[in-house]
Amino acid sequence: MCFEKRLVVAHDLNSPEAKAAAYGELGHIHSTLGNFEQAISCLEHQMSIARDLKDKVAEADAACGLGQVTFITLSKIEDM
Image (cartoon, rainbow, N blue to C red; front, side, top):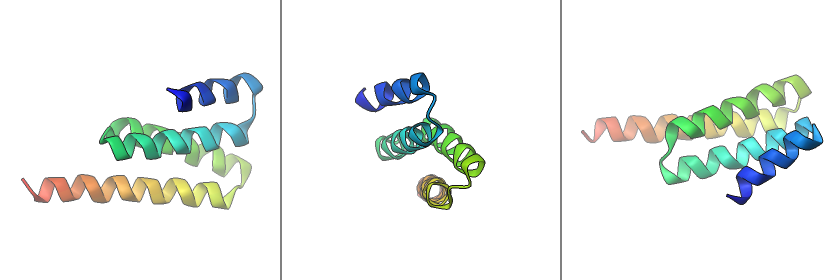
């Protein structure tokens, strides 16, 4: 809940850096909890903002998170 509030505050402040960070954190949390659709959505938002800002570190973080979600999802499919 605190991370979602952080995202709201970032939007209120109109800070793209804070938005990217908040989306990234939410994406990683959703991934950890197994909420993969929400994780992908958040990480894609982080990626888009990072690209707009030309922030390679945030872009790499988003790409890593998306890769992790993909790996976990494919691993679960193989186990079926």
